[in-house]
Image (cartoon, rainbow, N blue to C red):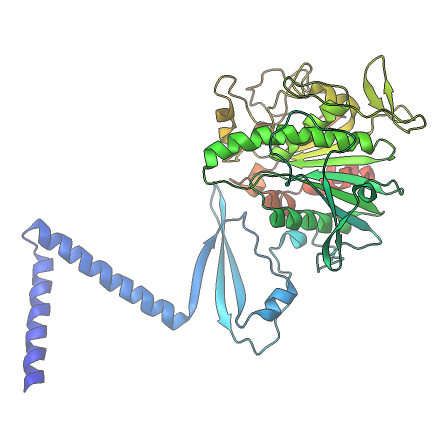
Length: 454
C-alpha cells in the first residue's frame, strides 16, 4: 500500500512538472525546465557511450600518436584505433577512436598509419624502429650548454664548456668533446632545436630526426645536436623574450662549432624555430660578421686546413674555392629581412652553398612574432619566408606577402596548406612533403632533391 501511494505521488509530480515545462509562467520555471532537459540528454548520451564502450576524442592533425613496441607490451590494456578524417573547406580535422581490448592477446607493432615515419616515406620501412642509431650509418651526439649561463656575450674558444654525450645501446654516455668533433670522413650535420624543450624532449627529437635521416641516407654521417637551455618557465610571455635572447647567445657556440669543423669536407646545418636564429647567427659569426653587444673570438686557422679565410672578402671557402655549408631552416623564428644585404645575419649567407626554408603561412605562434619588438614589428621568416636575401633582391619590402620565388641558392616552401595552424616541428617532419627535400639537402644527395622538385 505504501509503495502504491509513493508511485502515485511520483506520477503526480512528474505530470505536474511536464505541465509546468509545457506552459512555463515564470523565468525561474523556464530555467528549471531547461536544466531538466539537459540532464535527461546527458543521461541518454552517457547510456549510449556505456553501451557502445567506445570513447571518441578529437585530435589535432599536428598531434602524433606514436608508441614503441616495448611500450605497448607493458600496458595491461591496449588501445585499438579507428581513424576517421573529416574535411572542411578551411581545415582538415582528424578523429581517432580508441576501444579497449584484452591484454591477453599480443600487442601489434608500434608503427601505425599516421605515424610521422610512415607518412614521410610510405614506400620505405623503418631501418631502425627501436630509435637507436645504426652505428654503421649514423653517430648521434648531444652537445649540451644547459649547465652554463643562459645569457652571455662571449665564450672562450679554447674551453667553451660544452658537455658531449653520445647515444649508445645503453643510453646517453658522456665522452670527450674532441671525440664528437673528430674528422673521420663522415658527413657532419649540426642540429639546433627550438624553444620550450626539456633535455629529454630534445634528445627524443634528435633521435626522431635521425630516423628520418637513416631512411634516406646512402652514406655514414654524424649528427651533432646543440642542446641549449630553453625550458618552459612559469611566465610564458616573459620566457619567450628571454629565450629569444638566449638563442642569440647560442649563436656563439654554433660559430665556434663551425670553426672547429673547418677541416671537415662537408658540414650541414638544421635549425628549428629559435634554433634557426642560433644557426644563422653562428654562420654570421663564423664568416667574420659582428653583432652589437656580442664578441666572437675566432680560433686561429691551421696551416694546412681545408678551409681558409679569404682576407680580401672575409668569406669562408673550401680548398676548392666553393661555399662550404648546406643549411635548412624549419619555421625559423628569425626576422625575414635578417639575411638581406646589410641584415643582422647577412654575412653568413656568403659561406652558404644552398638554403632551404620551410615556413607556414598559417602558423599561429609566428603570426605574433612582431610582438618581440614593438618598435620594428618584425615579420618571421617561418611565417612569410625570407625577403631581400641573396637571390631575392627583387623582393625588398619586409612586409610583402606576395608569393616567394626560388633561386639557385635559396629555396622556400609554404607547408601551411598541409600541416595547418600549428607550430609543431613533428608536423613539418611527418606531414610536409618538402621535408624529404630538406633531408636530401642536408645529406648532400641533391640528385634526389632535384628529382623531387621536377
